[in-house]
Length: 289
Image (cartoon, rainbow, N blue to C red; front, side, top):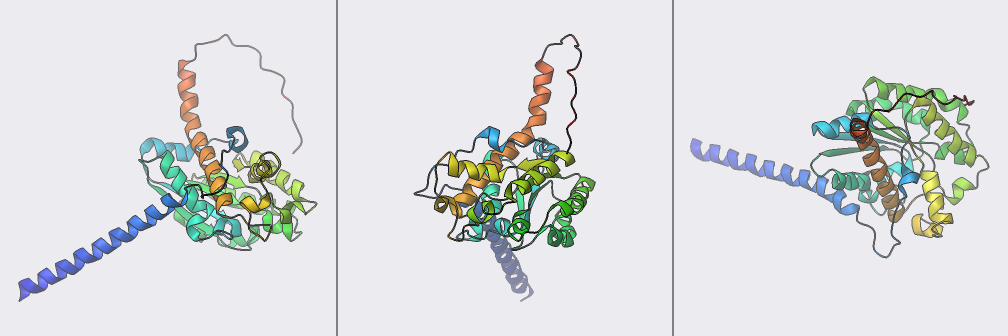
């Protein structure tokens, strides 16, 4: 009787493990299928020079070199949460995870979506410790600025809050990429749209973190590729659709891949480069922020 009971328990334990394994497999497999280009849509070919990050991703590079899992947190508002997508699988963080898995098939990619609809920077800072820091990310993707812009809230007084978040990331050694607003009718209708984009770019430069120029990438879709807004936005004139999130994710994946491998490529190039005679440095010019 005792042997039967032990066998029964062992069977239940094995069944439980199989269920957990199947759930884990599904959680990994679903995003991988999500990044396939939606049928009946134009091709997405982000120009490398447009999506290139200004700063290398040193922590991600270290994880790639060591083979350890890479933890990424996507912080932001509705366009991070996935508003406008047909499902959560089609949000940009999920599609980005799938694209990165293709780029680095031997690495585990853990993606945490911490987007919350309607939030601005002060709201995000209130939950920063639990929604970002607690996950110990190697990379933070921080989408910001859109809600403040469409609500006519100034961003110049948010600089201290952004720095507070960046300081938290520096303290744990994480890389950071800021993501500026989307190029969409409800955004570009605001007279301060250009200033908002410039403000975020200046913040990224001053703080020496990466910047993903979503506004410029989407503007190219509209003005160079001649795609109507309906190709990449839903009817509200603000949020991206599945293709929009897919192309955004593909551009981000290219940017992250290049920036994470840049230190390695630079070191290799330096080792192969012959010695040269030192010359006087060019004159330095200082520009006001």
